[in-house]
Length: 317
Image (cartoon, rainbow, N blue to C red; front, side):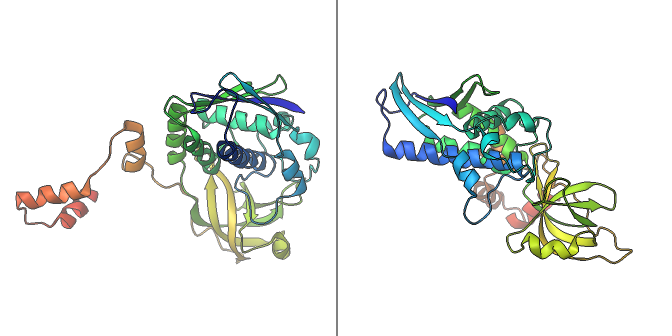
């Protein structure tokens, strides 16, 4: 068992006490983030699918609360090592160089790892994506004030001994999350195959030779795609991206055999996230952005011939 501590500082709690409601919210957010991190490690996509969790996942997320101590409020936690529970190496193991090492973490320790990466170098880990960063930023709802912070401490078995969750770091992570493109619908032509050494996942070998990880969408099952294995196909799906804005995987929405001469009809292109991304700029620069009502009022007072809508259209050109 790996041993961990959760320390709640500057919360509206008596020392060594915690309400059931606060404990429930903390458990819910820690478990959701841990599940996303584990899935990203072993499958290459972080968002859980529908249906019942597999037994090994339920076991690895079943953290044990073994103590509650004063000194702010300190929770003692034990958690199982991922690699001791997850033994089916035929599933996909994440391709990053840190994968084998991270299997020696507990799911709790892996949570500290992704939080630390998101704060220090969000584009430096293959594991981080939009879903994981969103799950981290949800911890803001737990904080009682701007001074509150949650410390996740781990013993010497973990790569990250301490991760801090506080308002300022969550704000930075939110900015990083905003920079990651939303999933983009695209089409690609290539040969569909099973990933090497990984029976439950697929890859598309594009006409360029690029190997792209692929998962069936919610309306498809992998067994229904088997007849396409080894065939040249045209896949329509959603492209999902990592924190460095590079392609992470394709979610297959539709698939059909491709003509011999058919090429990709759409390129995998990233959306343009430049200075016109007002939502992100508002977060980065702490300003409220464009006030359309005020703009229209000012235009009407100036008695300009063009309507406010026409002027807005001109400004966007």
